[in-house]
Length: 418
Picture 1: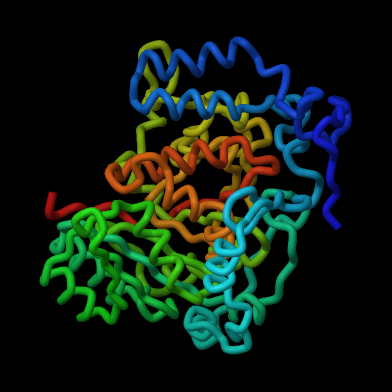
Picture 2: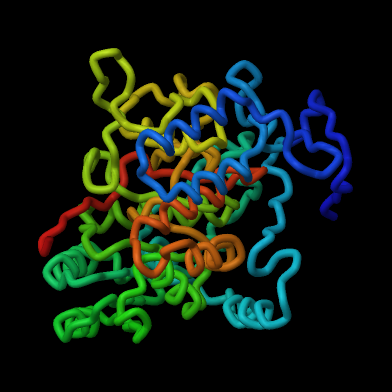
């Protein structure tokens, strides 16, 4: 049973289970003035994001918990991962009957789980050893030990979003077909923003269920499009990507990496990333590998694994692409969860959301991020706002979401139309 604390309870800062200290009003206290100044400086100097969003984030910010010296994540997670925090958005406390009806429709418990998924069938038919070995002792690697026959029942929906890019879309889908990806997924959904006949023809050719909308001139950007698509599937997990990512791995490698990703999520990891390690830096992936003349990394907004859960930390995770010793250098904040195929795991406390190829749970998204995707400021007019709004939403989560990345990945960004 989930424990509840009174809003005015004082939390012992020396208690390992403490997440953050609250004052008598239930508000977060003791936030570093230096951190506030640093965060304000980011917004004032760089002017990359709407000021009201930065102010809102600062108002929601909470204490730093854990230090490099005490193992980093040990005070963000109880050993074993702990109880997931019940959300305060759709499906959480304060949900209206109307919202709950929508949620119930999105999460039908009647969906049978007895049938083997297409991915599971492909793995079992391949004759390969279906076992993925994990570090069972680390909280970032998931809570649950699962059997191969359980993982084999987990279904996947491939959700792709496109906007005025039929050449990129067609080229990407050919790689998905030729390298076997389309044979590994149970549902195929294509959401077309600003639809054209060419887009429809491509989606139909590759067997996708096509979605579009009349809202906002037929273009609702990535956040609402993703929310609408996820709300119309029944699969356990989503493989989400935009129209311009090629599957560059061969069929056997793609099968191995997809299987490992599903296994991670069956254990309780919330997000699994699949962009190729060799496809960095590229669109949407700042360069954290090239040092500036003063020796500091060239990417903005990172603390080099020194803190976790503030605005300045949300690009820490990009070091997994360029530091060969990131596990040793990350102050306990990155672990290797699977040696083969290799995966590296960290948390949402030091990561942004990315529209790069990613897997996540359908129910998890609907309960925790759907409302953000639909209602984030400028969600219908600015594609970048999905990444920014989700980052603001999940940075202060305690416990944070667990995120893993395939070390080598299987997708690369190839834009043809633009």
